[in-house]
Image 1 (tube, one colour):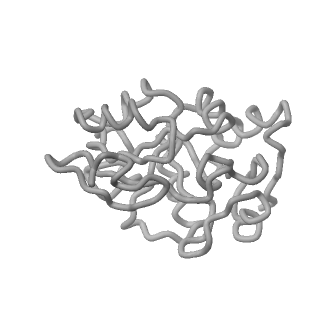
Image 2 (cartoon, one colour):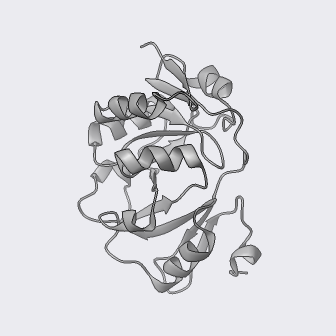
Length: 203
C-alpha cells in the first residue's frame, strides 16, 4: 500500500479523506492532542484494519471522535448527568467520556458495554467529521510506540500500512486526553492526560 500525504490546507484534503474513509480505508489526521488514526465508526471491517495496522489487542476498545454534541445520538443509550455536565464544560477538548454503548455500534469497536467519546478542539478534525460523521479513532502509532505529534512521526511508524496522512503540522497538545468513566454512580478517572482530576472537579 502506498500511503498518500496531503496538506490539511489543501482544498481537496477533506474530499480526499472522505473518499478513502467511505471506501473502508484508514486516515491519519491531526487533533488537539496527538495525530489520530480513524475509520468510519459503523464499518466493522475498517475497525478490524485499525486494530491490525496498529498491532493493537482487540481486548482494548477504540474511542470515537465527534464534531458536535448532537453526534452522541446513535453512539450511546444514555447520557448520564455528570457526562452531560463535563461535556458542556470541557468539549471541545482533551477529555474522553465513557458512555453506555449503543447496540447498533459494531461489536469489535469495544469488547465492553461502554464506549469512549470525545470532541476534539481541532478545526480540521471537526470539519472532516461534519462530512463523515463520528470516526472510530485511536492514536496514529503502533501500539506501545510513541504518540505522533506531526505527520513525519506518523509516517515513521505507519507508512505503507494506512491509506492517507493529512498533514496539519505539529499538533498543539501532544498529551493524550484524560478518560473518565461516567457510567457508574461514582465517576472513575481511567487515564490522567491533559486534564487533572482536580481540573475536572473529580478529586
